Length: 361
Image 1 (cartoon, rainbow, N blue to C red):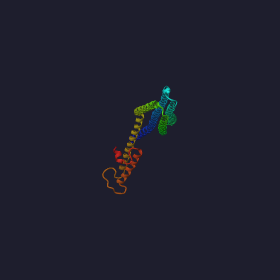
Image 2: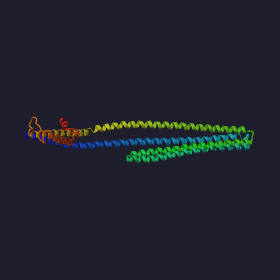
Image 3: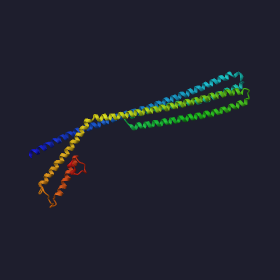
Image 4: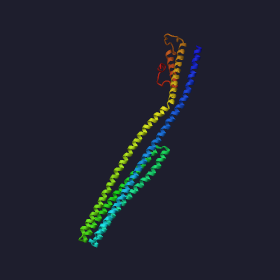
């Protein structure tokens, strides 16, 4: 009996030493697991930030290129109108021998006014497009600074605020550009109407014999200018379609890149878990040793209870009727409560689990 008790004490000592060592190793393993996972999540967030920043930069680049294209279209329109006016002047010069001085003056004045009206409208449109492009470039510079600062501090909220601010600024600039264009069109149309009425009155006052020829020349001018306006609107529509197509392609490319990022993230997380297999096994080993130690302690406690019960009067066997307040039922309930408290403190059973279930386990 003495040797068995000594062996039990030695076994318990070895078990506690193994449990202590396993606990230390498990704590180190859990710290490493947490650090590795936190590092990977930080790297993944930075990678996602770079993807989003690049996407926003690409969108701004596209908008600036589109603004430059619209500016080029506006300048070309202004140059074409100037060419139409020059050609009309040449036609007037060719017909000057057949025109009286008054008719020639009327034609030249009318032509210059009409060309100037459309020239002014075209130049104003070019200026509007130039201002819009410059505003987008300013927005891009501000967004780049904000995005780089958000990336440096790894502040996702700051990055989202920078994106929202950029989108609001672009929307305001777009609204101002569209409003300026519509006002320019309205002003030009009003001036054309005024010039047309003025020309008709002068031709009627002059009563010149060659009024039809002058009218024909002005009609030709009107047709040329109208054709130029139609061609200009067509170029703007084509540019708008190209911009929409470019935006869709950018969005599809971003979706593919985000999908690839999600796949890569899943793979990296899986690789990390595989790389941390040793640490996970260390933690599992500690949990197993902890459970085994709790069960052993419960068994020793149960054996001690049985020996204590047998050492009491009438504890050697047989059925014993309760004869006093210190009966078996009261004593057994106290021992069960004490054993349950020990198992709960050891982490072997939850607070609500009975002692009998833990012992059976």
